[in-house]
Image (cartoon, rainbow, N blue to C red; front, side, top):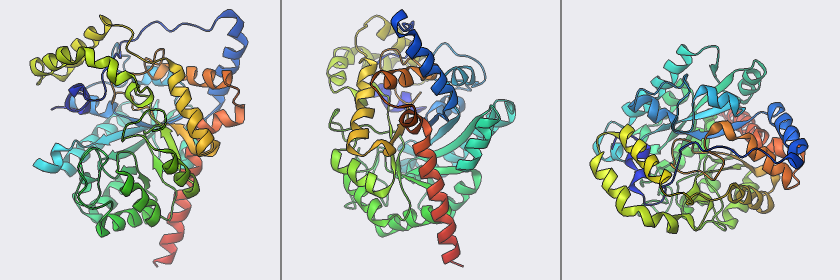
Amino acid sequence: MRNKIAGVLFLAIFFVGNVVPSPQAPPTPSDEKLWAEAQRIHREAIVVDTHSDVTSRMLDEGFDIGRRASDGHMDIPRMKEGGIDAQFFAIYVAARYAREGGAARRALEMIDVVYRALERYPNDLELALSADDIRRIARAGKIAVLMGIEGGHAIEDSLGALRMFYRLGVRYMTLTHTNTNNWADSSGDQPRHNGLTEFGRQVVREMNRLGMLVDISHVSDKTFYDVLETTRAPVIASHSSARALTNIPRNMDDDMLRALARNGGVVMVNFGSAFVDQGYSERRERLRPQLEALRARYANDPVRLRQETERLFREHPGLRPPLSRLIDHIDHIAKVAGIDHVGLGSDFDGVDSMPEGLDDCSKLPLITYELLKRGYSERDIKKILGENFLRVFARAEEVARHLQRESR
């Protein structure tokens, strides 16, 4: 299994769909004024996306992020069109590395490919290590590049490795992926620890001390509550949605949303079709045999697998949910947790289906447009687009400075 899409999502257990760009219907003439307003707000906002798996394509396929692609969700030209000011590149370490070894090396290779992109495109990209860096880089007209480890097994049970990853620029870590690791239970695996182990609590405390955000996407519900009991800094869910609307373990229920709000954290809404539409998984079942056949045929060729999967879904339109489903999740989280506790965590290039119209990252202004249509104020839209995350990031840095003074 070469990368996240080939190795996990193309299993068609949860996430199958269509990433083929389709023509975006422009706003109707009666909406032209609102569309212009949405574009202005989007330009003025600091737009932060906390999760993209384009890193896997860059490493495994030699994908050149600087050139516009006809497939996938993200490259620099489309990031600019979408108004992205700050992008977290997922340092995704598949579960198999926990079993077979080499997890830290895989993480280092992914970090290296991000640094190589920074070196190749210095006029477009700049490494950001703080909330202030994001604001400064955005003012300069470049895209702030950040990194988040996806899968705590990447540290190989070493606080020293955790510290080194922070020094290399990693600013959040998702405590688990789909696998329960040696110190934290996952929502995608059998529990072994009843949440966090004592070492897992040490990991959280050390992340607090460093100023690395604790990411609770993918963890079990018990792990989530253990994190909130342990952390002294606000936490994030880098790419999760609302379980009340789409009942899957990867989403957060209303009690969790309220608990995260009390912590001061932020839920970054996942755009994936299976995360935002309960009926999507039922609809995609029709294509399970064809998808499994493609998986078997192109098991060692992730590029061809993606191309053939895209072709299959072109031939079967109507599976993708409307964009309104995604906005429903933003709405729900804003109502339950509060407007200060919701943001955007796309999972671009980590899921193979997005809602209609949201074909890639260039279409992000449509979210701003839809929020305006629902009556959100400019101030609240800017919170959702990035200000909520920036507040949490800055607060985590403040907590880290305080803890470092305490430990002297």
